Amino acid sequence: MSYDISKDLYGALRGLRPTGRRRLCELCNLHLSEEHPHLLQVSNQEVLCACEACAVLFGHRSEHRRFLRIPRDARRLVGFTMSDAEWSALRLPIDLAFFVRRSSEDHPTAYYPSPAGYTESLLDLETWTDLVRRNAELAGIAPDVEALLVNRTHGRRDYLIAPIDQCYKLAGLIRRHWRGFSGGDQVRHEIARFFDALDTRAIAFKEITHA
Amino acid sequence: MSEQISQLVEQVRALPDTRARDTAIQLAQAILDLHSEALARLLALLPFEADSQLIERLADDPKIGGVLLLHDLHPLDLAARVRKALDSPALRNAAEKIEMLSTEEGVVRVRVEHGHHVRAALEQLIWEAAPDARQVIVEGDDQPARSEFVPIQQLLAGSP
Image 1 (cartoon, each protein chain N blue to C red):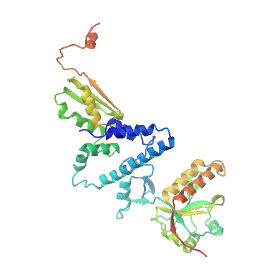
Image 2 (image 1 turned 120 degrees about the horizontal axis):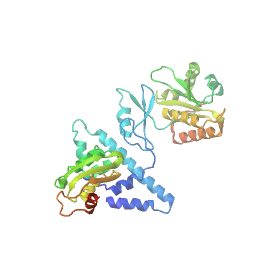
Image 3 (image 1 turned 45 degrees about the vertical axis):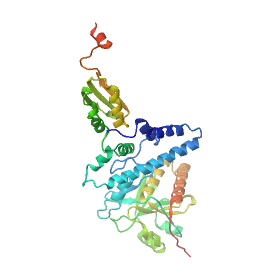
Image 4 (image 1 turned 30 degrees about the vertical axis):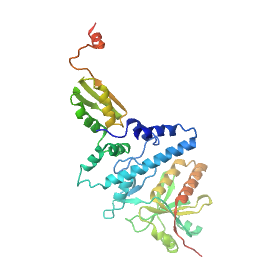
């Protein structure tokens, strides 16, 4: 048995790969490229790295729903409105949070990043219902795998429907870069960079005009 | 084709223009990744239960098997491929005994007993079956059992 790929060619082509540990598909152990799909394991809400084949095989099979494919890109909310009063009514300690509707629960949960990761917070259901009533796009958030991501820090007003893995990534980013009492310049810079990148790749959700 | 690609990769790596070099490497990598994912999906779609030998037949093809190796998709691991190579008819009368000792961390260790000057051919055969090996080490004696001459090392080993 011999292969048409010589030792030299194997070395030359494998050498092109970026160095450092490459991630493996958590379902089949295949090496993954830098950009790869994520699956959500519904039972424990764990995010798994997957290869394209496993994401197709496991993420799209609707009968058993053990895994859900997490969308790649965020969706931009056009014409979304939220007043300062509405935000305050949600009673969140910081101006950054994401809202998820779990398929196992009938009302959404709010999470806000903190130096310890992220914290779950009870949501004022009335305020949320009002918000959905005025912003019909919010009803289109996919349960478990998407979240309404809100950033009102430092004068920014970012409102996106974001993939859940991106929300966790943001929480990780904040935890890593948080310094001192108020977070510091570094974390502020990282948050701005994160939202700019997310927004650049975001796809427009729906054009809605508000009076 | 194998040699041509190796040479081109070397030429790209030697490009003085770092931007051109990085772009070329990224392009090659992106094309490799595209094929890697497509091949993985292709294998995942094979009717596995219906014909479990199909994937091994594909992997035995020199061109397909080589590409599967390159993308970490080959169904046989390093040790299995080396063992298979050692079973080759070409080695049937090459030595009294040839056995694989280990393949730890990609280092293939093979032991030969009373080989008939088989070392070079054996190494080549292993490299052909295992281009992904890091090193190939052939141990043991590569001399026929009844040699007409006594190697100098053997003489020295016997002296006080």
